[in-house]
View (cartoon, helix red, strand yellow):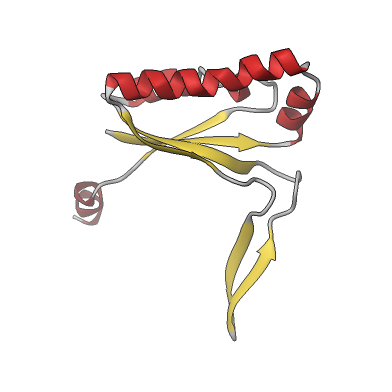
Length: 126
């Protein structure tokens, strides 16, 4: 089963990282590399990327075409990265997500969602 683990940032997470010393920041960032290495070794990693949390856009449909606005910085959770994993079940995806530094920040957290396959869509439409 494939799961998308979304790494997000918000003011609480930003404050957490801002309050760390350089040594503490390096240790927390090492966690990401350790998780990625572990997932590669287990064969569970499909893909992972960091994304620019400062330049996220919101696109809506307008009468004359797409309307593009910038997502409000710091106002809500913004996606800063993702891990697409292929794991045995939801419990394994949750176990992986719990390792990220954001999972330990009050007001933080990691989003985990199952990625649907064509079979899932077919079953939903039946």
